[in-house]
Amino acid sequence: MNKKDIFHFDYLLLKSGKKLENIDIAYETYGQLNADKSNAILLEHAFSGNAHASKLNENDEPGWWDNMIGENKAFDTNKYFIICSNILGGCGGSTGPASINPKTGKEYALAFPVITVEDIVAAQKKLIDFLGISKLLSVVGGSMGGMQVLQWMISYPDSILSAVPISTAMKHSPQQIAFNEVGRQAIMSDSDWNNGNYYQKNEPKTGLALARMIGHITYMSDKSMEAKFSRKLKDKEYAFNVGTNPEFEVEGYLRYKGSSFVKRFDANSYLYITKAMDYFDVSGKNFTIKSKNKNLKSLVIAFKSDWLYPPYQTENIARHLKLQGYDATYCEIKSSYGHDSFLLETEDETKLIKGFLKSVEKGALK
Image 1 (cartoon, rainbow, N blue to C red):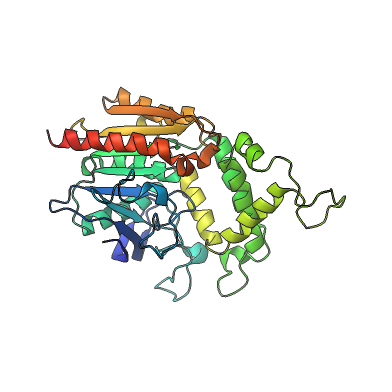
Image 2 (image 1 turned 90 degrees about the horizontal axis):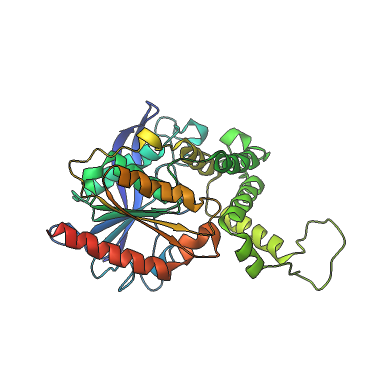
């Protein structure tokens, strides 16, 4: 019953006060929605992800969370109906800067309005309403996906039974904003960026690849990089030059990651999405859940070696939830993979999430 589709709606009033019209949201679903539509789980992708969370069939390309979705996996498609949509502002089929502006007949480029995580979630809510689902069993996501989870808890607490924010934060620290800004500057410094008007021309591949290389360093840990690369050379000896060819294995790896990224991602989307992440701030009084009851349950997961979103940031989420009287469980998993852990440490995540979803279902039947 897996499928890929596009949901279209007329407009969305954005937090900036602007009105975005003629919107498409690309999404995929896995499993079967039950008769009373009570088994739906919304998965939120991270910054560079898309709606393709898992294979739609045996011949399909792998998704970003294949090892978590399917029969008897964490998100068991024998039991649950899994939904994943490409975010507003993205470049995986949803309306974003590369989309055609109906008013001009050309790509939006920088004429695309600035979006926020709140806008992204508002678009997702329209999709969920379109599917006829009044209450999601759970909303789950890591990194930027975790920010979307938090926004669901704030904007639509009575439309979800549970939430699983993973490796995320209530707001970006100055360091996190700084990394995003360096990536944006790498793109905007590329001569082919042309103030965002590069469509139908040369894309700013060098700048986008460099932005991805910078970002990818933050996704790994010192320990995982040592284990994967150490100081291994591509050849047996130093070349003793500062030429363009990579000498160290880690250099070649980063260049590969950068060059492969430009084949699937839009540079302007990179600018808009990172800015949405930097604008996100639900700390303090902003993280107030106005629910009709206190039954909303949360499983908050962090990874010990994550230095991009260090565990103290994620733990603060659980603390804030408990202070408001909500059932929140915080789990910190030992891992050496850094921020990428939430995509790789699926054995521990599966055990935690399986048990958590069972407890949510049990509570819902009371």
